[in-house]
Structures are given as C-alpha cells and as structure tokens.
Image (cartoon, rainbow, N blue to C red):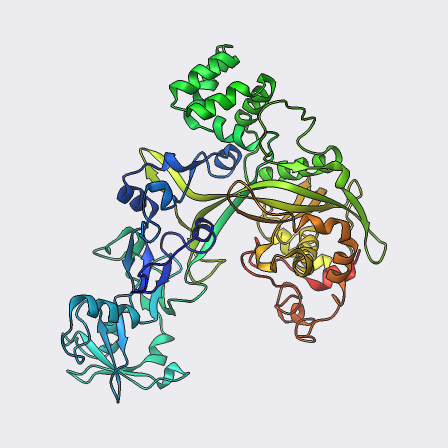
Length: 580
C-alpha cells in the first residue's frame, strides 16, 4: 500500500511551504495548519526546538524568537508517521469516470453517479480527483471556488450538491458547468476571468469566518500556481568567533539569562557558570565540555552572544559585510589559539587561501575569499498571495505563553565572498541614471534598485551559472547574498557572497570553495557572451518597453531558491557597460 503522506524537509518548509500552503500528497492535496497547532498536537513547546540567533531576533524580528520544525525522530515518532497537522483542501473533486461529462462533487458526499462504496475508498477516490481550482485574494485569504454562486449567478440556488462538467481540453472557455437539477449553467472561462467576493478564510487557522470583512476581490487560480503562496524570508549569517558546540551549549535561553545576571553582579566565573549550567538542566556531557573549555574562550563567546548591536535588515547586513571584509584580511576565527575540546568553528576563513583575480578586461581586481565554514539562519516571516509586490504580508508567527515565535531553520555550509578590497566600485554608463531614479522614487532603505546593487546582483546570477558547471552543485543549490553599504547616499563598501548550505552540523563537502583556485576561468565563463541573449532583440530592448532592466530566463534569471530578490533588480546592459 502506498504512503498517504508527503515528506517535507525542514528547509523546504521554510523556503517553499509553511502555514497556509497547499501540499500535494498521495492521498490528495492538504493545507498546512499554523505552527501552534503542530506543537499542540505533539504536546511539546517551541522553546524545545529554539534556534538561537540574537542578531536576527533583536535586529530584524523585534525580539521574537525562532523555532525549527521538529523531525519525527526528535518527537519519538516512526519515520512513516505524519506529524504536521493538515486539513484536506480543496473539498471539491472532479470525477472523470463518465462517458459524456464529468461530475463536480463534494468529496465528503462522494460522486453521486458512481454508486456506493466504502468510506475509505470514497475518500481515497476524492483525494485523487480533487479539483485543481481555488480562490485567493491579495489580503492573503484562501478558499474553495464558490461553485454554487458560480453556476447559479443568474438564478436562485436549487439545493443541488453536484454539477456536470462538459468539455475540457486546453482552453477553459470550452468548459461549461451545468446544474443537473435546474439546468442553470456557466462558461467556466468567463467565470475564471471574473472577480469574486472574498470569504475572508485563512484555512491554516481552521474553520471560516461567519461573515467576511475583506474588501479585496478574490480570483480563481490553480492550486499549484507559484503565486498562490509566496514566502517572505529573512536570513542572517552567523559571524561570531566561537566553535559550534560552545555556541550550542551557551545558546540556551535560560542559561544566557542567568549569565547576564551574574555579569551584572560581577560574579561570573568558570565555577559559577558550571553551577548555573547544572541548575538549567544542561546535559552532563555539555557541562563536561564547558569544564574542559578554557575560560578565555568561554568569556569571549559570552560577550559575543550578549552583545547584539545592529537593528534593522540593512544594519545586520552591514555588520556581516564588515565581518566578511575583516575575515578576508585577517582570517577567521581571529587569533584563535584554543586548547579546548575540538569542534568546528561557526565561521571560518583561512586568510592564506584568499586570492586576487583580475577581470577578463583588466578593469577590476576582485578579492576572492573562500569561506570554508558558515552558519546561516533562515526565517519565514510570512507570505503573500497572488502578487509578490502588492499582496499583503500574512505573518507566519504564533504566540506561545506570551512570546512571539517564527518558523526557521539552521543551515551550515560554505561560500565564496567576492569584493574589490579597498578599491571603490564605480558604475557608469547610460543605464545608471534610470536605476538611480528608480531607487530614489522608492524606499531609501531598500537598496535592490541601487545601481551598485544591480551591478553586483547581475554579476551574481552570471556567476551562479558558471559555478554550477564545476562545483558539483546545481545553480538552484547555490544561493546569493548581495552587500551594499550606503552612508549619506554614498556607497562605502560592497560585495557578494555565493554560498551553499544544508541542514546538519557537518555542512557541505568543499565543492564550492575548491573553485577559488580556478576563479579566473569561472569569471571568464560567467562574462562570456554577456552582451548577447538568445531572446534579443526583445530582451535587449525590454527597458524601452517598460521593464526595469534587460533580464530574462535566457541570460540572467535563476531559480527562486537562489535569488533573494525574486529576479528583480537585474540588468544585463548595466553589467555590460561596466565589465570588469
């Protein structure tokens, strides 16, 4: 017997799915419920699975905390047992086992023209035949298509619970839906293009409101559409000088609070720390690890964990850029001579491996820094429906004992940091002014359309393609992080981090940083034929037709898992005018 559930990795939950998403399973589509329903069903607390990242929590999430999705093993469940609560959605299905038409019916009642069958068989059949259309609005609501209102738009509902579906093929205008009782009918192509009253339903919270207060019109969309749920993500690179296990042990929220009290009373010593760790229920192995770790290492780690300065997304990124640039100059961890227990560092750069690479045209010299070890925390703060720009952001947060929590995932991996060292980046050409105007007309804190950001971003996408050839990773597995630091409207520093990460403490295998020694070839391949595109002249002339920049899937667009900006803020022409 085939499985009735769908396996989702914790990283998939954050990047692609999450509360309110429709997931296809072998037993039919379901909608994922809110995360508080998960912990309630498991009789567990989110703090048991907390991810500690104070810079992200206090700097971007306004003090909210981060909890990861537990695995089956962590909650003592067998691998084949589903643990995340869901509701079947949509609840209508289309039976195709009839010669002249199909039957649109409610899954709970079963197809009225297929005869009686056991409940389990009826549910199984309904899941396989679930209708592929739902309604959604830009305020984040999601519901069934109002089939009764759709068919009886020009007449009174007659009480029927199923409809006949005539026609099909590639065009919805060829589909006609008819009521078998009163013969009212509608062309589905016409109905698909209409706007409908929103029901105000958010199925991740269960049930539906008695009366809708939503003023946004709802549209009929396919349940597998990419714009049905667009995740909003924030990420932060861990830039602390400490080792992974020490970070995990000291990262206990309760222990950190006790340490803070000891610091205020000038009572923090190695012995008092060990005593408080025992009171917090820290495991004997971790206490032994603390006992064997030199006190200077512990004190330095404590100071870094409690010293959270940046606030706001740009401030957090600026701190990361400063740390990456410092690591490129001095290496990381800085001045580490620990004699304590061995454990991989959170952030590692070997300064002897940093290289200078001149661009193919000899105009710029890049400093290419292999980051052999990094930790990235990714948080899903919410989602939008239908429109990634104008859709309302629906938070994925939940409350537990008065504390706000967001779903997140902790990832380890490697990366390549690229900047120009101390040399400034001067972006010139005809394409600079349009991007400057676009940047100045929007939010000044949003640097996506800043010409310097557009240049690095466009180069990033070309490098993603080039790196995937030799690194062993597909371009969809390599992510980008563009840095531009602006003060008083002047670019102070800028750079680019290309990285790949995966869950678990061991990270990746070095396939990306091994290409630093061959980065001249990578850069040459990335910029080869950048001045042309197979979609030219359409792509080349796109800015003149109203597009922000010249970019398409043939020259610059990459997978949504790689680009932090949904392929916005790209311009092949700007890159071509400023080739390195």
